[in-house]
Length: 68
Figure 1 (tube, helix red, strand yellow):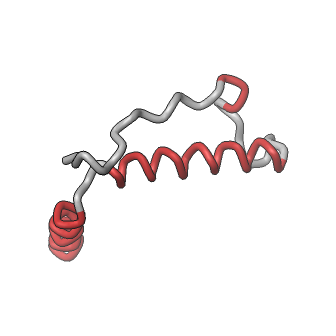
Figure 2 (figure 1 turned 180 degrees about the horizontal axis):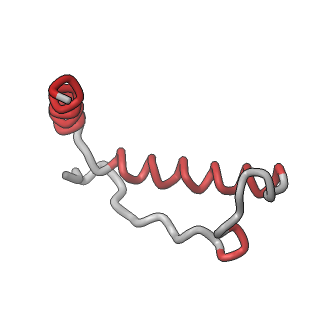
Figure 3 (figure 1 turned 30 degrees about the vertical axis):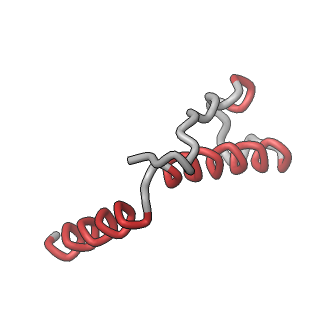
């Protein structure tokens, strides 16, 4: 649920040169770039929810977690 004060622009795909790398293969710079990319994806996903929706989803998640 996006509101007008939240961005809903999709995050670009991970650059081709970073795809398929393992942590052991990647240079520190590549690791940093992947982490930055993932943080941007998480921020974009988080921005889609209002605080009320976030709280509702969190409560539903905890309900499912405790039921498992």
